[in-house]
Image (cartoon, rainbow, N blue to C red; front, side, top):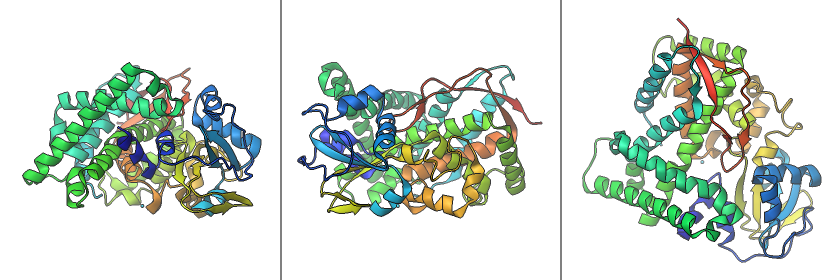
Length: 420
């Protein structure tokens, strides 16, 4: 099962714990300011657990030691970069919108049938939307069956919950029942991917899917499993939470919602959105960018230092794990004016977009899962906002849970009303 954990080194939301198993640790922290290990074996792991999440630990670390700071993960020194300038020193599928439109319109029709007083659960509904979109795109019409979706959701929750927590705090290895449950879910998901790949390689299909593209790329079975697993696991969570946070922020910002509505009407009229039209929805793109930034959608990324490097005056030795503290950077007041305010207009500034692209959230550096999430979210907003007004639920307090992808701690609710 270790091979599966290793795949995420190449992905934006790296499984930090899995990377550390691959390489022998160095005892040199190279003079980078930071924390000494609180325990010889675990380094600063308990400090991370005490803070509640790696993101919250990194916020405190950079507050204390500045934009380049170090800590210990087990016996390995880790360097964290928490500002755009330092990241700059250290540092890319074709889809049809028909599937997304069908799924989105099905959901919006359901919401439109609700009375204005009814609370709509964003997390439950939009995770369902994301799972249908990702699985049908990745593996084809087999996942048009609700029973397959339910089975996938069960396995997805078992795997993702351990990726987000069990590897980081070591608790997965300490619980034989949790580990068995995780490995069973992982084996079942791998079996499904292999079954789909075998079916599509043995008999042609007129319906393209992500698995079709992997088959055409002449990958090994292991590579195909890893790429397919990354896309299905991470794609669901990133897509769902980009949609959840975007709808939430629109529900609490009437002015932004109305401006988006007018752009959608001006560009699309009453026609459904298409992939060709999405680039013309510039304010919609700004709304999604600001959603990613304000929510700190993916609060961290990482890469292994392949050769010795330097950031500012600090030498980073070869094979040091370097954390990109994106959640810290995205709330840095030196980079973003009024960083805690939801303000899509900030992305009309070209220099702001360059900083955002540098972080891997836009342009050629964005991962396929995030690009897919942007597409689904654009289709959702273009349909939803033209048909319904979104309203906040009075008295609701929405708090974030910072894991590999930032999610609301509890389900988030809105109410809706028809525009006409």
